[in-house]
Length: 172
Image (cartoon, rainbow, N blue to C red; front, top):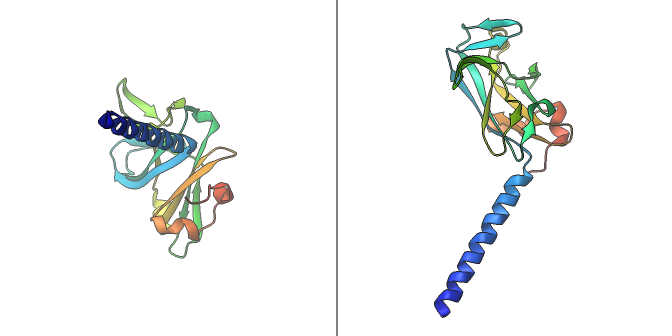
C-alpha cells in the first residue's frame, strides 16, 4: 500500500512538471532558435534575380508556440559592423529554389507556421554586405505585439539597437 502512494505521488509530480513545461513552452509565441552561416548550392532570390553564385547565406531557424499564419508575422535581419553600427537591414528572408517532397520548388515560409515545428528561412550574404564588413547580425521575429530576437554572435543583442527591441520580452 505504501509503495502505491509513493508511485502515485511520483506520477502526479511528473504530470505536473510536464504540464508546467508545456505551458511555459506554449507561452513563448515566437522564438528564433538559431542563426548560422551555411554553404549551399541552392539558388537564392535576391531582388528579382535567382543567384547561384552566392554560396554562403544565413540559415535562421524559427519556431512558434501556436499555429500561425505566415502572413501575420515578420522576420527582419539587422547587420552591424565591428563597432556595432547598423550597416544593412533585410526586411524579410530570401526565397530559395530547392528540392522538396514535391520536387524542385521555391521555398520561403509555409502558409501556416506549425506549432513547435522548426522552420528555416535564409538571408543572402551579397558582395555588397561583405564589402560593408559586417561582423554581427540580429534577427527579429514576431508580430505587432510580441517579438523574439537572437544575435550572432550571442553577445551582440544587448549592445545594439533595432526597431523591435522595445517589444522584446524581458530575459528570464
